[in-house]
Length: 327
Image (cartoon, rainbow, N blue to C red; front, side, top):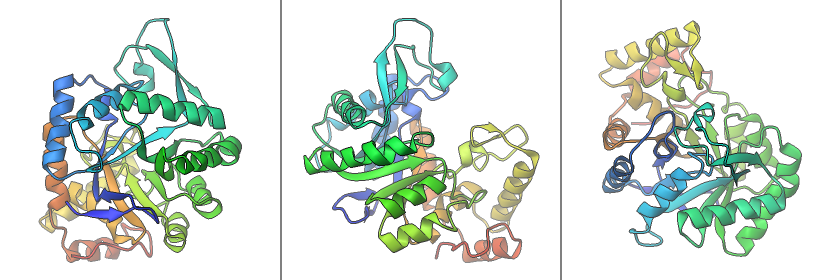
């Protein structure tokens, strides 16, 4: 699988990346052997970009990913993690299901975008991952912590880069507005935009993507299936982690019928769409099993004909001006 440069750095990523929330027991448990088989399958398919976070399974995702990567040559992959939530030991028992992860509640999350918090978070991640440096570090969901994120967290990441502990700096969020501010007001190398540039939501198109292109900042797109509705459009499906509104279900079903008419699949179109914009460097897909990895790779390689995109524009399924991929 080809790699692409990340911003102005020497870091390169594969166009399709492995999102490791699933192997952190997102929603339901994943056994160790299932997680490692999924990672092996991704590696064998040519995927070399792996994204994790302390938030995912209270560190379980980082520990599993680190164990897997220890058997791979240093420099043969690109690893990203995130800062903004510290994991504090907790002995109150119970589980973490209310936060979305089927793991014991051994720790509690504490928001911290202070300089000291960012440094500690990175040091903790280095320990869980078993590495001495990380390719990309994202500020994770600083929606309600803007002052501290811009004033303390970002400058601390610059210092950590100067110390050689990280290579690239980014911000990862489920919104486009603050990511646009990061691109405009800082020297981030990359932003991870989840759910805001998909077949159902092109919120990143008016400002974030043009700004990123102008500033030479890479954009990685997550949530191309909008948490499930574009993978399996149906009543009762999920959109942005909640029950999908009927209007969104109808739109997703229109996309599915359009794909079928043109001999492709909705999942293939959802994976292909972001690459129509030149600012987009890659997409992240969350997978938790070998079967899901193989399906993602197959869909990623499935052609989507130009006639599909032409009809989508004619039917006003895309925002005006949304660029579409070439052949």
